[in-house]
Length: 115
Image 1 (cartoon, rainbow, N blue to C red):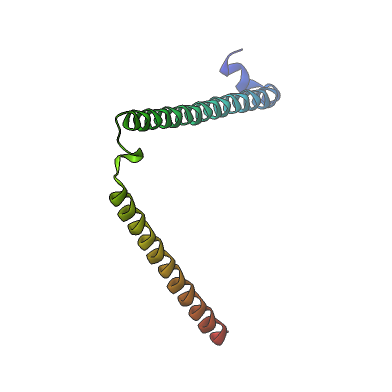
Image 2: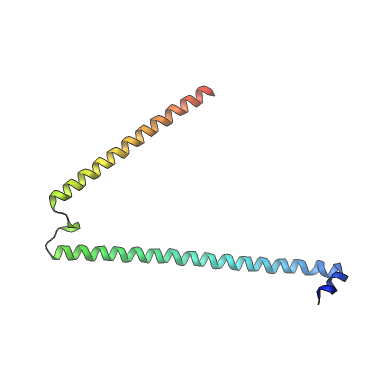
C-alpha cells in the first residue's frame, strides 16, 4: 500500500491510524520498561558499592586493631574530644530547631490574627 492509495480512501486511513497508534504505544511502554530496568540496575550498583565500602572500613579497623591502634585510629583523649564536639553540634542543632519552631508558632499566631 502506498501513500497515494491512502489519499484515495479515507476508510483505509481510518483503519490504519489506530494500528499505528497501538504500535507507538507499545514502543513507548517498551522504552519505559527499559528505563525501569536501568534504574533498578543503578540501585543495585549503589548497594554493591556501599557493601564494598563497608567491607573496606571493617578491614581497615581490623588492621588498626592488629597493629595495636585503637578502633577508629583515635586515642582515648581524641575520642572523648570528638564525642564532646558531636554533643555540642547536636545541642546547637536542637537549639536551632527550637528557635525555628518558635518562629513558626509566632507566624501562625500572626496569620490567625489576620484571619
